[in-house]
Image (cartoon, rainbow, N blue to C red; front, side, top):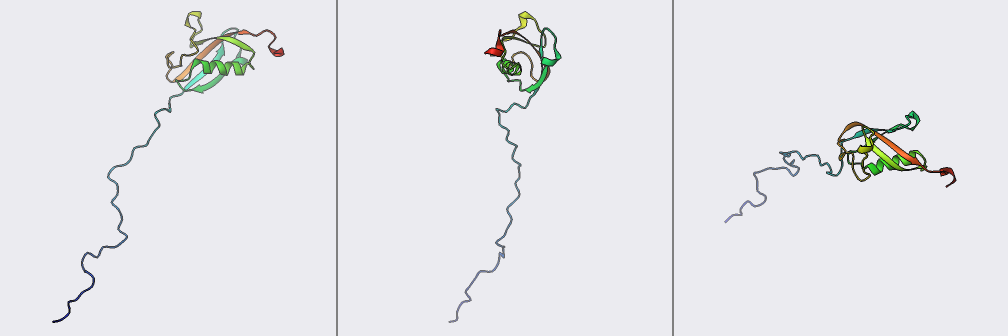
Length: 128
């Protein structure tokens, strides 16, 4: 009896560097849900007397609280003011907003708005 031809199988001939199939679906861009892409451009003005030197503009998300705006105003005045009254888009004593409200609570969800404020000055603020 003779020997059988042994050895390697012949046939498929596949190469070791086969490329994987391309993906059928693309993955969506993941965007964190806590990031608010909406922007409000707020022009902050002193209600009375009208003074353009105390006017400034800032960008905020609609989720910004009025207390954040109050802090910006106090910082702008060098800490010499307190007891701010803040109104959105119109200054009227009946429309003063609470510090814990947001711009969104006041109906501002994007675009531009005007924030009016009035305050009680501290006496002798430079000496404190």
